[in-house]
Length: 99
Image (cartoon, rainbow, N blue to C red; front, top):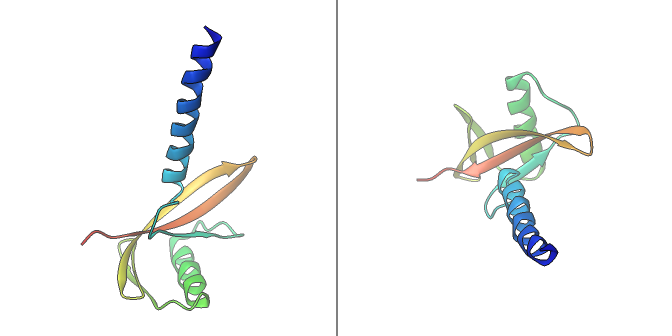
């Protein structure tokens, strides 16, 4: 009975880990940004994203409705709030928009 439990727990753990990575934006083509400061005002948040991406040498334009044009490609802005070790983390995910 214990062997079956162990054999079932391994795939469940892998699926949970994959799901967490999926939600946190760890995928090809996605851009992730973590800020030290928490932004509650949306306009300040957009300005901080734009400033960070420009500091990385990217060409950035906010086109509205949570959409950015970065280096000529369209991205959708997604915000995630996750507790990491008891400390809330505000993660910015820029997901490529489908054409």
